Amino acid sequence: MATDWKALEDAEDHAYFMAELMDISPESFTIEEKKQILHDMIASSSAIENAMRDEFAELDEVTQTRLIDDLAADGPRSREWWYEVLVDGPRHRDFPTLSDGPRRRR
Image (cartoon, rainbow, N blue to C red):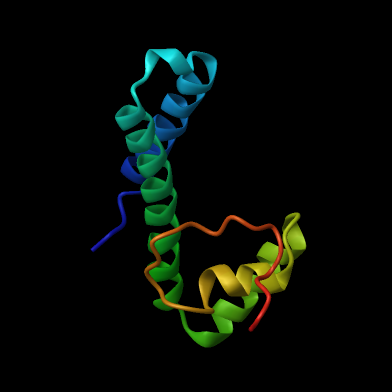
């Protein structure tokens, strides 16, 4: 089954747009609406990351390694950060990756 990236991106865009509106005019939103906007932001960003991990898991190990290396080389985030997002931990998570750096191990 193919991922509907447009729908995922549209949901995230809408959630963050609503957050911007809330930031501009917080008095226009009830506490319940504010909670829902926060929930939608977390859920939509998590859904995108979960879909990324699903598609990444379908790749062979060599392709996975190359992709992580390429992402780290082309962007501001480290190889360790990409490994944490795409490989380390459960494939489906309730919260998006919020940190720019890798998590500290306990």
